[in-house]
Image 1: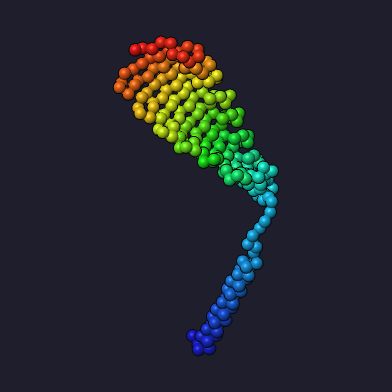
Image 2: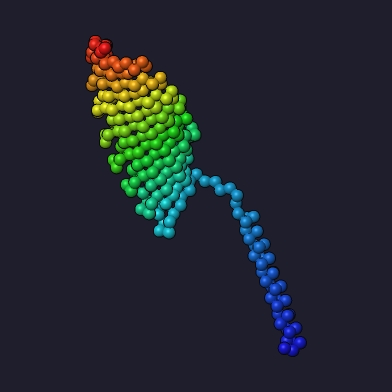
Length: 220
């Protein structure tokens, strides 16, 4: 290759490198200017996110009750999930089915977390929670929302199981903190009519009660 051709090639490489550096510098400068010009705070009362078809898929706003909420919809516009915080600071999460009815709820109020599950009619059928004093429990409802069974462990560690009909509790089973188990049978008015207990000395006792809850017979 002739010396003149080599010099020509070197000159072209030099020019290309110079132009490339200039273009890169311009792009970096433009990006920096654009980033600097972008607003750091955007304020609005409501934000709506639309899909390509123009349907609302998410919405962020504050309700008339002062709840800051994020609602997320499916492709048909049906609410499927919601996250919110009330004005008093209580947060909550809701999960909804294809008809927009609540099926799962997680909330935290007054130092008491709670989870509720609902059937297809929107009726609460299962609830789990922790009390402000540290006790925990689970409640099972029937299809009408009435309590039918519950299991609670009190803050002192004493467990209690209750089973009932549509009118209230009919059977109670518990163990006292000092280890004494007992079972109680309740009438339709909620009054204990019979109980079977085991004392701390391992002696058992069967007690019968009248309709007012007064003991009328006992064995031994």
